[in-house]
Image 1 (spheres, helix red, strand yellow):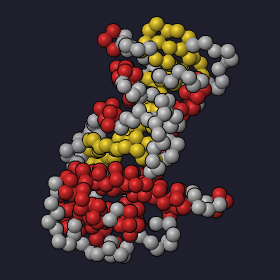
Image 2 (cartoon, rainbow, N blue to C red; image 1 turned 60 degrees about the vertical axis):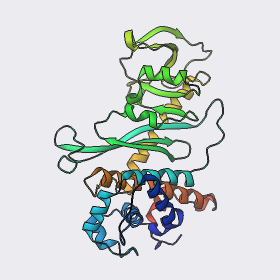
Image 3 (tube, rainbow, N blue to C red; image 1 turned 90 degrees about the vertical axis):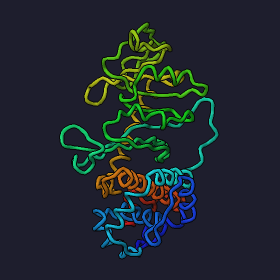
Length: 350
């Protein structure tokens, strides 16, 4: 791929104008603009994401250099404010469907890992008065379900920054995969729900250090634990009104700093060591969040309204999905010794 190829031209090939127009009809949005249409806004935000432009004024100067038709910064701002962010959300789902490999036929026992977590983007309270946080800050969250083995975004939803992560979790679940999550998602009654579903949701989720265990029964083991693992037992979780109805497996271990890590799961056929490995894979979504913030201009919010903010963030994730797809396709056709890293590949568009 030539270094001079702007990403927005690739985006035109993957998501043509006609596809965006069909989504506009589904949403019920009438695009009355003759020149700066929703599609042009989408292409502008795509290029602004990868080139890390500083805002609408900066984009006004740079868009012609990347081959796009010029537009006034006030036009950019008004359009971003007006277009429902649901359109960009649907475009992300479309891009995921187009670029991510089709999920293999679901087995009775899933093997792939679905890591769920959120990342917060904060600004001064004056910029987003509809999303206040403590002190003088405001912010929003992206809640992401990430396929660990593939490095692919699976599902995404958005909230203001003060929304609990647990509230958005149902929108990210998929019983075809093993859910992996941190303490924010460790509610015992939800574990009962996962267990009682027609299609069981398997999980490995960290518990809070003060969790109460009832009716503890150690699991039989023929060999000593390996590494930092200390216990492996089954029990009911919590107490009183918070007591879980079902029994769950608990694996305890120490992190590299010697702090306790308590994992709850309904996977009973894996070793305790494997349960620990599954949870350790959670770091991949932290790497993903760090990468999009460093490379896709996510911390620089151009607008101040929900449509402008979430539309920009969903476009950034669309760009990530496209880049990951093109990267995987390119590396699949060359010898391993000539393959690029994802970071080197990203620089081709800078």
